[in-house]
Image (cartoon, rainbow, N blue to C red):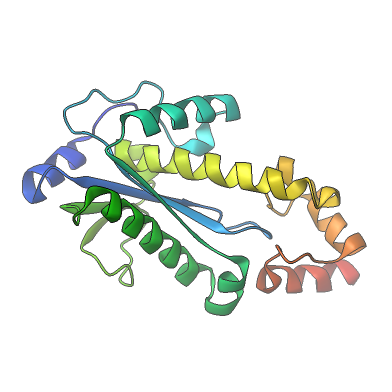
Length: 209
């Protein structure tokens, strides 16, 4: 990708130059928080080469690009929702909450509200701000792809740190997703405070059977 898209140019022309791209990482794992990022990239600056959906990039490339995004961006806001929030209000609402926190962080850096918001996925009526949703936006929109990379790098770092204290679950490799090794570790060692019990209850039952 590594280029501004026509949609982003049209949104800037319609609403104004300050366009926020938002994406999240961590909807599906059995453990760890949902992490969202809201990025404002400067409109008059060439897109960073190599930027794409974070899932399509290897870890060293993501790390390099995340550093470059931080250097170039006008604002980079991060927000998260804990495993307790995921269990209490469900994963969709927790994702929205993480996005709201990331957006609020970005607004504090800007000192004002952005002109418009571009979100990966379908529009979210609970987000609380006017926005445009783009399915697979992290593969189609430069600003959303930048947010995707930063969010992925931050969450992966967090899961690697947690793995140092919870070795059997191999979070440094699976990032909390339900790999076979992770599922077997849950059966052998039980759940930690970082597991989403609402995600793991059915899994535990099926493993025990």
